[in-house]
Image (cartoon, helix red, strand yellow):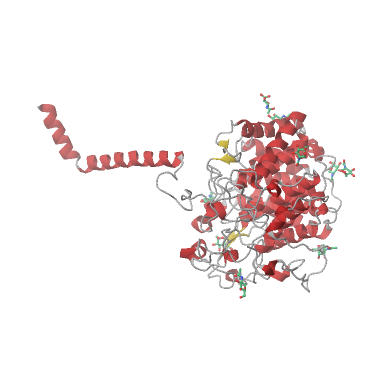
Length: 592
Ligand SMILES: *[C@@H]1O[C@H](CO)[C@@H](O)[C@H](O)[C@H]1NC(C)=O
Ligand SMILES: *[C@@H]1O[C@H](CO)[C@@H](O)[C@H](O)[C@H]1NC(C)=O
Ligand SMILES: *[C@@H]1O[C@H](CO)[C@@H](O)[C@H](O)[C@H]1NC(C)=O
Ligand SMILES: *[C@@H]1O[C@H](CO)[C@@H](O)[C@H](O)[C@H]1NC(C)=O
Ligand SMILES: *[C@@H]1O[C@H](CO)[C@@H](O)[C@H](O)[C@H]1NC(C)=O
Ligand SMILES: *[C@@H]1O[C@H](CO)[C@@H](O)[C@H](O)[C@H]1NC(C)=O
Ligand SMILES: *[C@@H]1O[C@H](CO)[C@@H](O)[C@H](O)[C@H]1NC(C)=O
Ligand SMILES: *[C@@H]1O[C@H](CO)[C@@H](O)[C@H](O)[C@H]1NC(C)=O
Ligand SMILES: *[C@@H]1O[C@H](CO)[C@@H](O)[C@H](O)[C@H]1NC(C)=O
Ligand SMILES: *[C@@H]1O[C@H](CO)[C@@H](O)[C@H](O)[C@H]1NC(C)=O
């Protein structure tokens, strides 16, 4: 059920004190979900243009601060200005930016991953944004993120990595008018370093600066191009200066460490497991942005010193590894001079080999902990357990991006087909007949785990209160089904139903790629409304654990080991306390 007021065209508002930047023309408002049943006869395909438009609209729904301050005003009429004191504990203005997921924390690390992915996708597939007439919204989205990130970086070494307290936030479920405080802001700095957070921000700023460089040439293939009108030399220069400063701090701080190791529990929501991947990615991004071989030399040295080669990792906020491989391969085409300037071989075959080893292991099932679900979803044990669609769509974007520069035509087709299968799964070709983008089709999730969209304010009754989600958070990709392909659409099940900045980060690019490739309708167009039924039994996941069955093999093994260790410890303790008696008993027995 779509509230009627959402069908009307939302008035287009321009904030008075923001000049320039791109003005959307025509303006775009997501159509109702029933539009997902209509086959498109247009070029570009209307369905793919809508997926692109909606997936950017999601970022508008996540906005924090004064909503009218962006380029084109606020499109999401059910959102209100919020968190207007952010930063006041440091006498700084840290208002703005985005809420990270279904709640009200602002988290910098997944934000920088998101900006990187959006900018990188647009850099090679920008013409798809142009064709869908979404370039102005891309500009507005990126600027909303980058402008906040600039505020969060008030001096060279200081970067705010989170605003809002996890404890306060976890205890609140409700609208955006009464978000509880305090909302402390957490910085890293030279005394409390965070190589991962500094580097990831540097990488995001660097690729943003490339994207905004007027008439940039980043010719990975003869058809790669940035969006035609986004270039702005002033903005590009300001992003580049941010990137250089952050990179220099990360590179020159001798104590290389993660921000979580420096700050501890308060920032545990996104505790990254390593900084070397982010650091290496940032050297590569800076190499492209500056066209200076020193950065390329750093990237290559880091790649060697931190043993980045041959790793089987997903691409997500916690792992940049696959993106590093693909970026090296892209640079071998687009900027061969960078390697030469550093006295290195551009080594196209080497980077192809590196990338293809990873992709082939994923496709042929030799990747250490991945498999295809029975319905065909790429599933990584562990990484997919708390949001299955994110790692699958991330690999799809990388495979599509890389396919045209693969070492053979055969591999090109292989990667395109595999990626297409993952995208199709997300868009309806799955055993549930579910369409995992909110608001795209009648079979889209009706109950995304988003406090503002839900209209609920009873944290004990998230699933049922209110019975119908108040607002449609168009374009949000939910966490996704469990490893048995089943999906419950329960609002309290954050594993399956939460929405997040990083989950959505690949969708605009994936849609742009389909538009450029003139792909016909997404699979959901031929799926009848209502051919989708919620399983009758209980789900079993981290949000709604069930007895026994919900535990992974690893968890079961962990428990078994825990029990054995526990028993041994008890025996050891008994022996220690009673060692005299035991010794006496032993001696008695021995003598007997
Ligand atoms: C370029 O970006 C700057 C910085 O955001 C802005 O002030 C200026 O108006 C933009 N220029 C155009 C032509 O959009
Ligand atoms: C925004 O404010 C309006 C008016 O008070 C309210 O109805 C709406 O639910 C609020 N939106 C959110 C996301 O809380
Ligand atoms: C550096 O960061 C730590 C940890 O967030 C903070 O407690 C400290 O006040 C900061 N130092 C400065 C000078 O801002
Ligand atoms: C890059 O591609 C653009 C457009 O396809 C073309 O005009 C330009 O000459 C190319 N540049 C290089 C260095 O190949
Ligand atoms: C980064 O640090 C290394 C080691 O100190 C140095 O060799 C390199 O030149 C630095 N990179 C840049 C771009 O300054
Ligand atoms: C490096 O940073 C970590 C995390 O902040 C800290 O625990 C450690 O003591 C620091 N090491 C040195 C040598 O300063
Ligand atoms: C990068 O530098 C090389 C020379 O090392 C030059 O040929 C190339 O045109 C430059 N590319 C850009 C985009 O500035
Ligand atoms: C090329 O890259 C591969 C990594 O795939 C590496 O093993 C090899 O040493 C590199 N060769 C050169 C000449 O840099
Ligand atoms: C990569 O190179 C190694 C060593 O040369 C070779 O055995 C392997 O088959 C190559 N892998 C791919 C995917 O090309
Ligand atoms: C482009 O079309 C080809 C041929 O239909 C297909 O194999 C491939 O998956 C498509 N690529 C993208 C990026 O959509």
